[in-house]
Length: 352
Image (cartoon, rainbow, N blue to C red; front, side, top):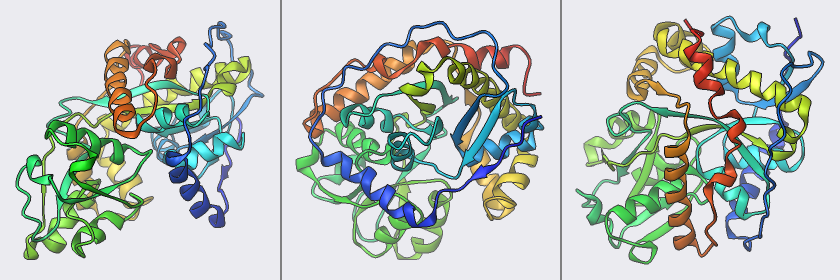
């Protein structure tokens, strides 16, 4: 079996990558004539093919589920995650696959980076299991979304949290001019700290920050409120040049199958996932891991992307309106040759 070395990007590059990713959001719109990728993917994978994957979480899931050493090709694991880092790695031709939400691919299209989405995962009952909640600063006097008018809101352009803010405003009947958007990176505890210090009045919080923020600042009046919107898209994202390469296209197809099996395994083995990933790999408490697993609910991996593309189109249109970009057909972001690959892998009984 091939070895799977983990390739870490130099720590010194981390900040420049993030800054470059954020800076793209203010660059002029680039007209992109994204090529359709229609060639048939080879039925067999060349075992000597190597792809570089940026998703530490998937690597752990494959390891815990016993699938890591069964990959029928070679993998280099890059310690990168999130839209800005992945897009910079794509531009440097040093990454073939990464995990991302819906926004990075849209942002990439507008900045001239040709990419495709090759797998889609959502949450069952997404309104009951949101990825984010809206954190409210102490003394901000925000009880409903309409109370956001005139408030300072943390905003990260080009990332899922930034798009969610725009969607929340639209739901409340507000626009960017009705609030003050404060550009901040959405990494780590930047948003909770900004809320607690009064730098902003509201900010989308995810992960354990949904739990930790009110626990830390609740005595001062901090809280979170539900936004009531779907915020659950998760994708495998690739540069188009990778899926235009027949050998890599076949390896990526197989990787999608393993990704789906890993997702199914995680869903069916919450105790092992909490211990192996959240506690041992992420350094969280078991209580935090249990909270995150419960909050995530169960995965939904569709065999038909029609609804997903329609929702993506609404996001494209909203972002175009609010940022002055030109709207485009969201289907160009999806490589539908991979549409049923993940769902078929699960249907075949994998991931038990």
